[in-house]
Image 1 (tube, chains in turn red, yellow, purple, cyan):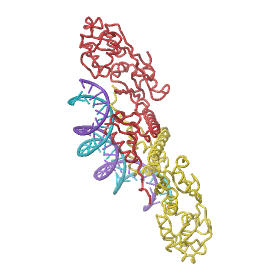
Image 2 (cartoon, rainbow over the protein chains, first blue to last red; image 1 turned 180 degrees about the vertical axis):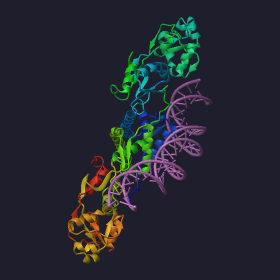
Image 3 (tube, rainbow over the protein chains, first blue to last red; image 1 turned 135 degrees about the horizontal axis):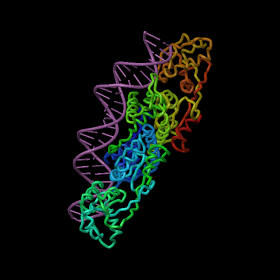
Image 4 (cartoon, protein in one colour; image 1 turned 30 degrees about the horizontal axis):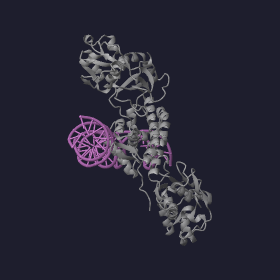
Length: 288
Length: 288
DNA sequence: GAAGAGGCTCAGATTTTCTCACCCTAGATT
DNA sequence: AATCTAGGGTGAGAAAATCTGAGCCTCTTC
């Protein structure tokens, strides 16, 4: 007699979320990163789900996974549902702490662009707390609890163009008068923006096969400090060294500037209501 | 400096689900029942959520809880999101096991109404598995994994009217010729349908202050068996004793029948696609 | 003034969930 | 060929979550 056990336990929500992330992002590792867990955890979740359903959701290949027909059919529904849930959580948070604005950004932007502007923002909006979280990649704003994200990208409102050019300490400037001089000077390299040197060189010295040599930093702000200390030449992002240039801690001996395709942009998951703290912060950051 | 910890951990999904259920059902106990946990678990979830948000979601009163303004504002969003998620899960299940039809019903209906019809159904649809889960109250079909629910109610398609009348074993029939005889005969009482006796008496013997006396059963099917064994008089639901009447195991000595306001109805969460197993089962059950 | 409904609490048990360290594969690099 | 790298899979053990159970409290109802 086909009588099921008393309570057919329903599927674990976390496993469903792992499936959705893996399916949407096209891989377990990417999903693990979005969810903030190890890939093994995602593997386990998907496996558990498949065992429960007695059906495959992904086809495992050696270079990654691919959705099965079943997985592809149900993915959109789950994405929609989890988006709705994420938005609901966001509203819940916003309603329960309306005076806190959460901003996600790159570590470099947090330290060199946002930080100098904070005192002014706070003075402008007493009572509003501004919380800044640094991360390497833009978050999925439909899921993660941020009001604003500030990243180089194509989406969102333009905050500043990204112009790059070499800078160094004043005492080093005499040794940097032509692009070719870079071959014999230490070039400070930020690990996340290593291509900056190539991008600039491609325009400024198109003939030369230039390869920057010098210390690598994982924190851009640290590279900026080292450049100011005279450790070498840095490929600067204009908006991030404006302060150092104004104070004379850094100089830009070469006139050539290169505009990167990705501009600095401010982006929010849903329309900001005029007058609300997040909208006021956005407005203040966009102001010249 | 208001820099948040690396990863602002997001809200636990189970706690959100507990909140949603409690808010929608208006109480922690009801939510606990829907979720299949103890009330203490729901209390803990809501408490954890409130602690995380640093905001109250419910106002605790001595006779239950009530939503705060905040809770009431965000509830609809969560209900929508979890409904969408439940539906997605439902589709996932349906797509991964398209040949199983899950039916939720009362224990009494499972044993006395559905069970006799199963052999016919199976013969009619070879390859389709029919899984029956008995429960005391209709499930929330947007959340629980059932294709069809068969319950007395007002929603859904009519399966049968609920007519009640006293029945007993043939050898007892001689002692039951007038309603008044019930006062001196043992009345078998089903604990879930105890009011049946009052409902019937209110029509059949409006003057008398009738109180049935007799053994109480928690399983209606057991009461039916006992009645057939001659243990007393049962207030029968017509559709549930049809078999026993036909076989002569029970007789209905009194002509008076009372129609209950709740008819037996078949109900499904979403429109059934014609030709799909669930729809075919529904059609077969609705057929005379 | 007893009983009942609804919630709360806290300790302890149970189950989920996660990490860690390691293995495996196929394609790319040297 | 040998090595790297990217992406996954595994299994043991640790950590965290979730749940239960028994008892308490408060108010309402009989």
